[in-house]
Image (cartoon, chains in turn green, cyan):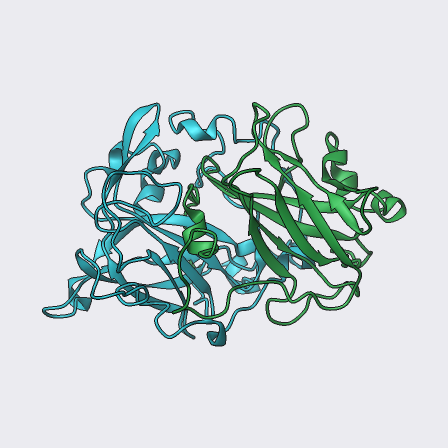
Length: 189
Length: 241
């Protein structure tokens, strides 16, 4: 039997993660480099998701870097890197912002449909291994009620629901809490 | 459980990786979840992943000696870092996007938030990327970064290290880590390194001197092999032998 190898251990992305993953934000002239990574939105309703990441003291984590991966509105994952995006918390306000499209429903392992969701990974100084969560949508109540992942959560289900912003069309708010009373549900998937 | 019902990826071995809360590394104290992670089987949302290609890479992306040159080569010890990306079943991982970032030879990052008194090097950005080839091999050229101080539970020092980010074919394989340099006496004193509790796991984050790959009269070489999570597709005979 072939000996199974151990995965390389994770280490924190640290406070200077922007140099490697969003060099523009670090102030690095990228004229010698190829195109940046960004989402190719594909079809679907354009949406904006904004939020902040808070630590266990309630302070905003201004060095966070976030990545999303999602299906298009047809529930299919596009070729290439459409459907992938990354952004950083604003250095002054800590706010992050993704401009994307509302995803469709992706199949669960048994072939039934999951509620629309976006996979979210969070990196920052002090996070030893990236945190994996999902953004669901509060205005998808019927689909959410049948979602196998949401229904496996015993405490904190509401932390995964992006709330429609009543002052702006197709905008959602999704705040993340790394620790504490409103702690976001994180996955080991 | 029948093998056909097995999840596509096994859960990560969380005793091998660092825990979220490692109090000796002060920054983890308020940034680690207190609730246990919710274990779920991967679905298409995690088994799929973004695919990157050569056309997104610039000509000098894998050459940190030259990708930010203003008027000459950067200061420091010239090195080539190479290695192989495998999965947990020792299968080569092709087309893995590898992104790296690092301090300069003096231990200073080109970042607005780094105020360390060591000087910037106008010819060095500390940013690079490459793709693994069909056999999983990758390589980039850079300078060896310097150690630098950081505030922890009191003043502390980071061993020389390069940050490295990897995308396998599945988003479930996503990994960001750091690698260190064989023989650096600061490794054993670093609270970030020691967030990994198993000495064998720490050793897997240490790049080894690779004299055979050194470029004569030009650059020393280090080898850093990487293992990503593997799809649970072991043949039946392997499972039962």
